Length: 401
Image 1: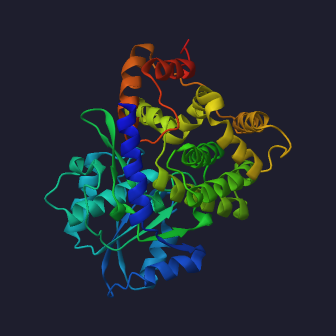
Image 2: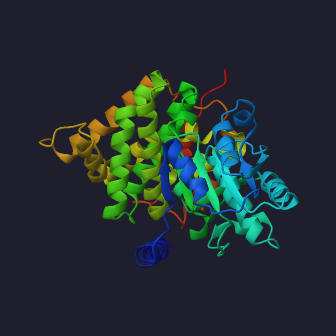
């Protein structure tokens, strides 16, 4: 069976290498926002669906984007019902608002959930006869989406540059993911001022989400020089600037660097896919509503420890690139230096190591679902068996007493 998985991974790598994955046009800063909107080339008074969530709307975080749209004689229509883990209902509601107001483009402003929801709303627009659930899997849309701009308000998911869109099937209590080249946003705008109000805890866990993307991209057997270069630079920027952004959220330089690191990590993992950290994390989010970044942060070290010496070479490469070790040390020591640095960073960020919501009675079913997600889609460096996955879930389960 594992041989068949590797054949499948080779096919995926060949598709990426020979066909290539589209990249969004990247814009940065206030002028970049103006340029991105102008490049939509929409007629005056055109209706534009602005996808966001209620908190961002009520706090006025999206106001600079609305102002920029008005300044170019466009009419924004705000849909702010996206939940932290977007549901099929959220996507259908957004699609209905798009149609009711005769919108001709989509601008998404928010975290990964908002950006993913906007992608799927766009998919519904171009595939009006297809229910959202049918987009789950690989290449199920295959049609150019409406003109769109993705504007992240967290430096974590990298959704503004990825082929993936994750959503919840609330009826079945599980996460589903659509992956298609057409889901890559056509334009991405990085606006650091939209992230300065993020609390320290969210700043930390979303950045560790990006770090996890970068590390799992490097661990992937489908890694290439291009993906390694982008993932390594993402790691370097996160290690260098996350502590500053955590302690001083108003530091514009640190915020800019984290947004760009998230973008680079997104470009890396969208070409290599992710691994067991994400496979397990998705189940915790679907079952308990655990924030995705937090779940990844809690799982990062247990999964790396499980791989052990099998990934020392890749971990040593990260440690050397980020100047976290000595080039004179053996590979084993370099890898351990990276593990030690991550351990110290997570502690500095006050990120917990266990989750009280994980129930012992759920561990087996969570593990089964995690491995079902990972196999065969994720080109992991070594295959995990069910008892291994159960042990990791047991490690992170905290007794509520």
